[in-house]
Structures are given as C-alpha cells and as structure tokens.
Image 1 (cartoon, rainbow, N blue to C red):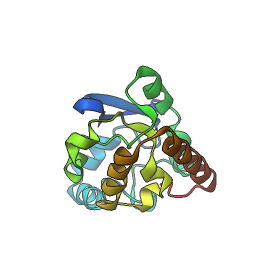
Image 2: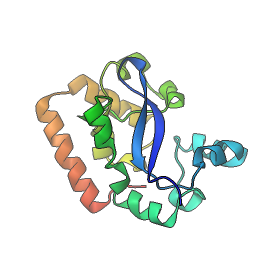
Image 3: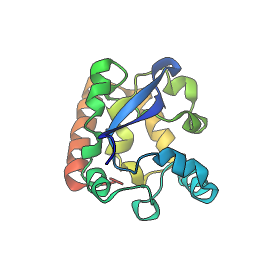
Length: 164
C-alpha cells in the first residue's frame, strides 16, 4: 500500500510551479522507475510524455480503472480551490513539455482541469496538434466557449473517450 494521492510538479500561470493532485494510479516511486529506465523514458518522451497503459509497468490494476473512468482526476478540484488551476483552461504541463508550446502564451493563462484538448480527444491527440488546440483555446477563450468545453468533457468522460 502507498499513499492515496499523487502529486506531480506542473507549470501554471506566469510559470509558477505547483503540485497537481491526482489519485495515485501507479506504483510508489513511479517517477524514479521511469527515469531509471532509459529505454522506457525514451519511449515516454517520444510518445508525447505518456505511455499506453499496456506498455506502462508502473500502472496498478486499480489505477487502470481509475484512469479509464477519469476518477483519478477528481483531486484536481483541490488545485482549483487553492487557485493553482481553473475548471476550464489549457492542461497544465510538466516543465519538459513547454518546448512544445508558445510558452509565454501558454503561461499567460491559468491552466484548467478541463480544456479544449481533453474535449477534442485528449490522449488520442499528441504534439504538435495538442499544442495547436491549446493555443486555439487561448485565442478564443470566452464564457460560452468554456461552457461548450465543459459539456464536451463531461460527455467524453461518460464515453471514456481518450482516457488512458
């Protein structure tokens, strides 16, 4: 047994780093396991900073269920309450991912728990398309667009679309 929550450092508004919360879906010390295996880490980087569940030895059996149902994301409401994130906005990224974006533009808005990238298919969409989608959101952000994104995300969660 390990901790229930997992916290990963992400980069938010104005480049401020914060710990993004999730329910732990991986073995304890998963980040160390990833970084200590050069082959696995290389695959992770080449695959847009993620691994398919079947290729990722760090994911637990319960973790697979949490991820498929997006339940692992619920603790991000803590980040919203703390002010690190908003409900809707571009997905917060790890520092290594900033090279994929127009970083000053991305860091000019508060990241969100739900965003256009997730509403468009999330894990099925990699870079550079993911970055283009996030930049499109920043260029066109509005209350009406946020409402549309919210409902598309809820719909995708129920369909388990794009969940890894």
